[in-house]
Amino acid sequence: MTEFITKRVKNVRNDVLSGITVALALVPEAVAFAFVAGVDPLVGLYAAFMVGLITSIFGGRPGMISGATGALAVVMVSLVAEGNAMGNPDENLGLYYLFLTVILMGVIQVLAGIFKLGKFVRLIPHPVMMGFVNGLAIVIFLSQLGMFKQTVGGEKVWLEGNSLWYMVGLVGLTMLIMWGLPKIKATKKLPEALIAILVVTGIVIFSNLDVATVGSFIKDGGGEGLKGGFPVPVLETFSNIPINFETLKFIFPYALILAAIGLIESLMTLNLIDDLTETRGNSNKECMAQGGANIITGLFGGMGGCAMIGQSIINIKGGGRGRLSGLTAAIFLLMFILFASSYIEQVPIAALVGVMFMVVIGTFAWSSFRIINKIPKTDLFVLILVSALTVIFDLAIAVISGVIVSALVFAWESARRIRARKRLKEDGTKVYEIWGPLFFGSITAFNEKFDIKNDPEKVEIDFVEARISDHSAIEAIFALVEKYQAAGKKITLKHLSEDCKLLLYKSSPIYTDIIEEDIDDPRYHLAANPEDFPKPLGEYKF
Image 1: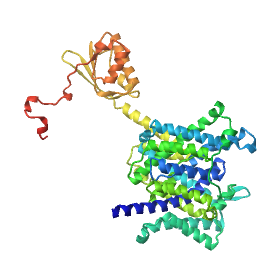
Image 2: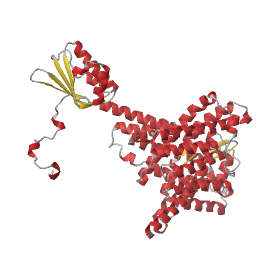
Image 3: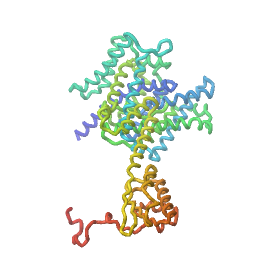
Image 4: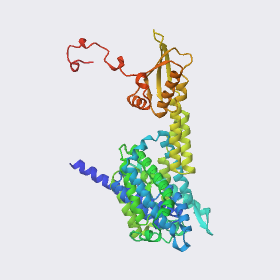
């Protein structure tokens, strides 16, 4: 009992400390994504709080962190812009259209969970997963480079001189602390990310260094500050926007795209966390939690969100494993907004960039370089393709493209496996024994196996080593039978699967005499005489 309590207390400490670290890292991310989407920073922060809170309680993957993400923000840009164009500039209709779209996005995600569509994440091949991880690591890295810029005359320019060296030095110090702290035996159990942030923040404050902070970052982006109140329902959404078919026609495509991106990113992050923790999450439960979170977020004036791989990695590396870590991150984020905004605004951006750079190093699948010459070239192509598309476009396009290419490669390779072994019986009947999968991709090769013109009067086609997979295969068999009958030859079909026979019987009565039902196949029986076993089989040792 003492050991059980000790373990629980240890997990609670790790979850809480890791959650605080994640909350600190969430602030600039949520603010940055709000700026990308063209909305107020508090819209991003409220989304990070509400989505993170709800998914941490009801989600299918304890330890996974959710919030406002860049993958969703880039889609919201045009939505907000088009919405604003529908009214006067001071009406800010784009923001209300965004809230309504997030609600619909959540409904779609809940439906995906109800219909158990989350299980289809299993169809994502490993090269696609590695490409996703590598591409996302690159995206996180590139997003942090923007922190090395400052606003001069309304334009973003790269840091120079002392400002650049201060930034590089503090980022390097943060990374050094995070790398070195776990190597010191006495400090192994300390949350290295949180310690690094506190140390670097202390150095900046007490040295009075002129560097970018969370507060200056928000002001440079046009925000007024981190301070805000408790989120309340935005009832203006339903009074300012007409709820009719035209509105649905406008927001539905955006909602569908956002729902797809959110679910793909969440479920793939779930798989990644599963691998890191060697545990199993519930994908359908996560779909419903993400959907419910987005519905509530839209009602309370948030920009919606999904799983965040960077923050999730920070949490897992910091020892956060349970729901308490995500709950802590969400609650502390709200506390920052309500009570501690002035303190959080003093945290240097360099410390948070250093944490994210360590996330990049931990996220990237470095093993992909070692296996370049060890995996099929098609898999290597898919890996590189998904990585590139993740960087150039977005996660949804990258993953869908990777799955499609992998499926086409599989179909092509399977199509090449169709074989036909030919032999003649003593009575002159020609037998075609079909081997391999019979589906849309192998139909052409299947038809090429037969020599209808030169075959004898009697022909048997044995499907015992073949699997009839789809309607294309059924049609190919139907067409083949018609050709043999048109040539005046007798054809018999053997060992067809039950579903295939049923379809053929429905399609035409001619199959009653063509399909051979009563077949004695020795492979379906024990290769022995029952009289050789006088005792019950259970009493024998094989």
